[in-house]
Image: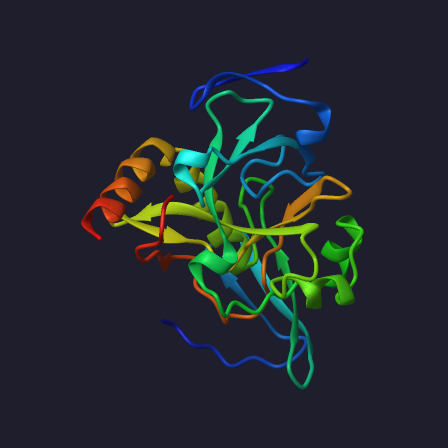
Length: 75
Length: 153
């Protein structure tokens, strides 16, 4: 993982199209501004993980039932 | 009586009182705002969240207390407002004092093993028939919590 130290008001770039600026640094929170093309999805980590899990769950119903049945039988 | 076409259960009949509104949809499924809770006795304690808009969309869930009896629920103020709930309601969840609030964990398969998303439980206000997926901001619980054996009736 690349680690960069920045102060409020400073920024960095990811490729040619994404700019990330540190707007404010608080005692337990930082405020970040992101400029990115519309087609680049910017999601908080927990939302990204939940979207991913929901997509996986949506297609797993039938397989899940088989697995849960197996768990039950193995008890 | 209205009927719902579902891939999982075929055609099922329901009453309007069975419909739970998810005003925000679910992350990655924001368009789906109406779901039925289906809990067949033979697969108890599983609860299925069947989309009314998409017959093939059905989430398999377990009540939070089945997955983790010690789960500490945390729901943000904005989410509570959408659910017409407050912190006092929340404190009563799981203490059997408030059967009007249902908390479910969505199951999926991770490396072919069943896991539950404890990072983002479903919280349903059964009185208001409103639900949402309450994504936690802390990193206390896993989005892929292994589901151990549980008693199916």
